[in-house]
Image (tube, rainbow, N blue to C red):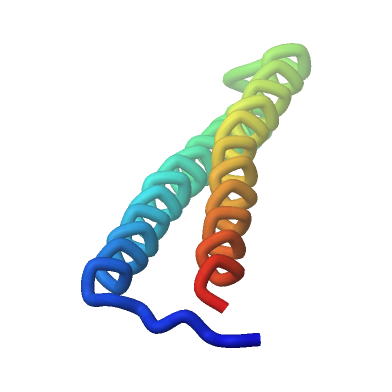
Length: 97
């Protein structure tokens, strides 16, 4: 099977696509990091509030569930973005083989 020679324009197109993928991954990673911070904040506030009797068990459970929901909503965009970018990189790789 013959390999295609890449023109300068093709090389720039590939580099541009890879840079766009990198930017999308970074955006998704920022959302994931913020959701992790929020999750641990909710968890710490809930546990310390319960230990020092500022909140009751119902509010503790509510804070933990809300933290988990935030964590799930923060993880989904990351997973979706990473899977799309993997497919896009595979397509680029297969196109120029």
